[in-house]
Structures are given as C-alpha cells and as structure tokens.
Image 1 (cartoon, rainbow, N blue to C red):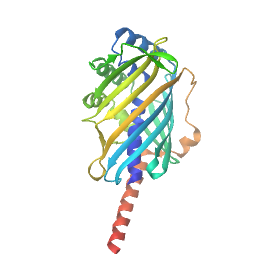
Image 2: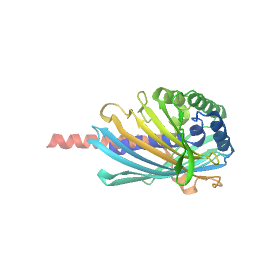
Image 3: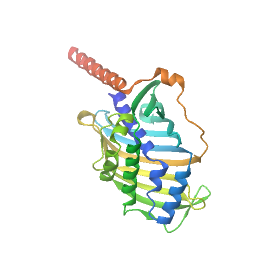
Image 4: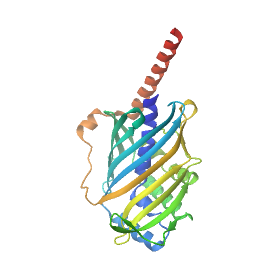
Length: 294
C-alpha cells in the first residue's frame, strides 16, 4: 500500500517540477515590457539548471493519519535537443525513511523516452513526439497565463542574495490547471502514469523573482491549496504543499544522455505498476488470512 502510494505521489511531484520551467513562469509577468524581456531571455537559453525543495503534509486513512514529507531535487534541461535530467530525494522523517529518485527524459527517433529510477529500480515510458502537440501545449500555457488578472508586480524591488529583483505574485486556479493539462494529457500521462490527482479545488499562489539587471529568473515560490489524490481507501489530502524552485545556472549544460546501464535495466512503467498492484493485493490477502487465523 505505502509503496504504491509513494509511487503515485512521486509521479505527481515529478510532473509538478517539470511543468514549472522557465518559459511558463516568465509568461506570468503582468508588466508587458518585463514580460517581453524575460521571455526573450528564456527563448535564447540553450540550457537551464534548477534546485527545487518542498515541504508537504499529507492526511490519509490508508497511511494511518498525517505524514510529513520533504523533497530536494536538482534538474538540468537542454533546449536543443530537448532533454531533462532530474535527481532528488524524498524524505519521510516520521518513518525514518528516504527515497532517492532520478529521471532522464530525452527525444529519440520521434519518441519521448522517460527513464525514472526509484529505490534502485529503473522504469521507462515511451510516447510519440508530436511537435504540433508541443506547440499546442505552449499556446495553451501562454493563453492561460496572459489572461490572469490576479498578477501583481510589486512597487519595490527586493534583495535576493545580493541581486536586486522584481517581485511578481499571482494565483492560478484548478480550472486553469486542468485546461492546460488537457492540452498535454497524453504526454503527461505517459511520463508519470495515472496520478489520480484531484485538481477541482486547487489554488496555486506563487511569488516569482526576476533579476532587475539582466531580467533572468531567480526563483519561484509556490503554495498549493486544496490538492487531493486517489479515491476511496487511498484518498489523500495535501494539507500543506509548499515548493520553491531556484534557477541556479544558465547555458552550462552541454548535453544530457541516458547511461547505457539505465537503458539496459529499465522495465516498462506499466509492468512496474502492475507488479506494485500485485504486491499490494498479496499483502492484503496475507493480512486477511492472518486476522482470520487469529
């Protein structure tokens, strides 16, 4: 049960981190001149590196109540060719456990290949790479973010680790998120599996920092409210989900390649999820038999 649940949460977090990239964040700026400058900078980038941390509190009967989690991840992204490499750790202090994970996502022979390693096991998902679909996703993101009337550019700049920065704040609703994800449903589903995330009541409040001197992104703080996942006995409520993404380097990654040993050892993600389901069923049957014998 816990293994399957953690896999679901990990998939959701991975999707969230990969969605919070440079281009999408930049499009949220309401001051038109700043928007154009930031977007121009992002469009010219050849690569990007980020560091993301998160503090999460979950409530679930399946987990016996409340569980606190922390996340720490670094990600590298190249633009041409399109590729991502992510490495991180998800920790559950109350259980004294931690889970390391890695992900390589590359485009090869008109396919998107996503290799995810969790607890020593690599799995791979494959889907067609459709450039038209990518353009539709980008257009949907731009339409969503440009139409937001909740965005505010602070009157005063702030010091961010010695850099003078513009501060932009705003909010995105669940309806907005669902509209965007509907444009990338096939890609997101293939990359992360069925996360069973409930987005109806979600609100994402964010603060975005942009360097005044060179108009480069510095960081993005996100606070998720009203997020839930799963159904029935596996229903989960995220009573706290705070995430911060820092943009650490630009144009420093030459290439991202998947190691051959990862390619050779990876199993299909569908087989992995089926194995997890079978393991959960076996655990349930064993527990039922033990209780009956007692």
